[in-house]
Image (cartoon, rainbow, N blue to C red; front, side, top):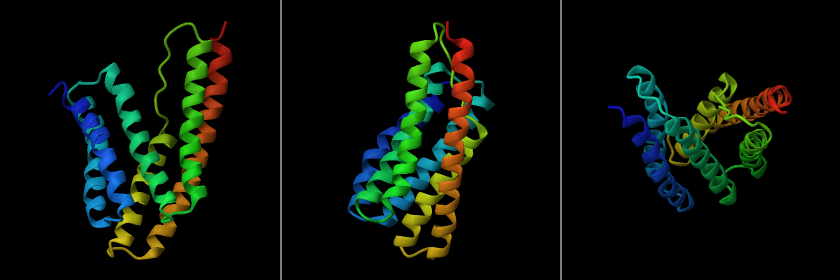
Length: 180
């Protein structure tokens, strides 16, 4: 049980290229199933790690990496294929790139090891991004109407932007206090 959370994160990472390929081929029904499974593993790995005290340093890095690879790649693939607006994908990928830059900058400036726990806004943003991808693929697979996609797009944009601002403010407060 100790390694199951990390195995679920690895499975999500391994599933990502297949999801991207199916998105590119516009096999939306299959993507809907695969992405739903990936979304479930995202919640399940954290739950299992907490429930069975199976958290690890590897898992603390692996889980957000798996999320960012899966979500950023899916947004990019959907934008490149014209299924979603490019600016929506740019916002999601740009926020993740900024978070990565802040983390790298803090790592270089701070002499001690630093953890970067996800904020509640970041978690909410991830959940809504997953729901948006599910809604887009569900819409193109013929299961959902466009209204749900638009509502989730607005929520995705708002939470992604706000969580990016929140992470930037937290990073700016943290780095000067820890540098030197």
